[in-house]
Amino acid sequence: MLPKEMVAVAIATGAPTLRAIGTLPKFRSGEVIKTINDNVSTHTRLPGYARDKRGTIVAYEGAHVFPDSHAIGLGEHPDHLYRVRFESETLWGKGSDGPGAVYLNLWESYLTVGDLS
Image (cartoon, rainbow, N blue to C red; front, side):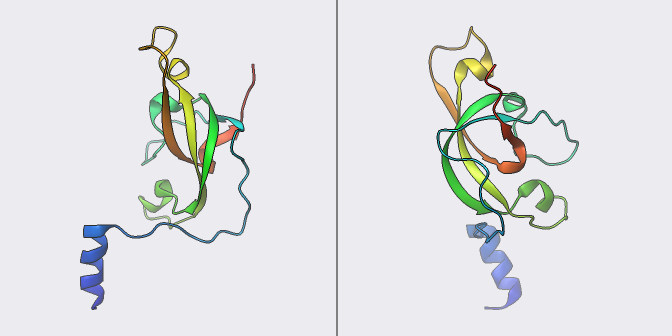
């Protein structure tokens, strides 16, 4: 397959983003984390509603291309990726639409050790 055709296939079907990385994951399943509160002017996969919020790691997804740097031409910069559970009340406040949760896949660069207060 020619490089031009390979690009067309990758665009149509997606390309694997899983990468080898030289560091161990910082967090484990069940651990409480807090997201950063970083208002960037470039691409980010950290939703505004989930910034500066406490959640719980529910799964480790491996190391993947970090889209924030990749989208602006700074390279892949693979980073550990986690599935994080946020209680609805944590994101939307006490008047939220009843009990529930939101699950987000978030890169380690977005996470800090949870504040238990």
